[in-house]
Image 1 (tube, one colour):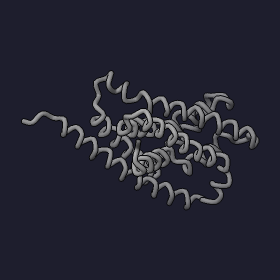
Image 2 (cartoon, rainbow, N blue to C red):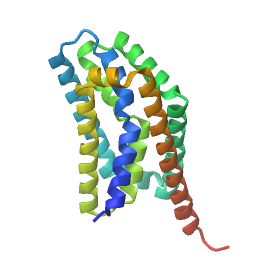
Image 3 (spheres, one colour):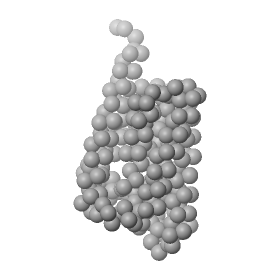
Image 4 (cartoon, rainbow, N blue to C red):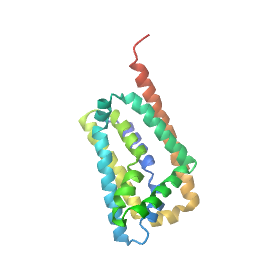
Length: 213
């Protein structure tokens, strides 16, 4: 059974990586011209698809790494560095620019009814950062019950995201440009600290398994 600290850490990591406040204005841009019910359908479908993707990586991500011959320690280091880069982009507002470019490009290519799959579910919600974070967290939760707890944490994170997308217009007005900038930078700093911890844990794990010289 996972400890309360593990579950809180997992929930925080996933929520910060998914970044509901940052996605809200992009979601509004993606669904311009849609009715409230249509936006709800897009948000629900996108959240469910993202949940399935992250749940699959939570259950089978470590097995895939094993087949590839990658240790969980090595993946912790690589994943931590990736999450640190995302945190860097959040602090310096580069991630928001990149997400907006992704959403703008996708509208011109994909039909409006498919945006819940691309780019909303992939890569805006279940992107490289969220997938890496999920595999990293799953690596420290080996038992069946612990994995079940992780699935619940993923579901809770995406439920909060879904609720944020439902009130995206109000959330965007409430935060404003300044509020979004402050919140995104604050979440970026938190993610940077969590990413650093992943790297430290990965180094401990990797060095601990090295044969004595």
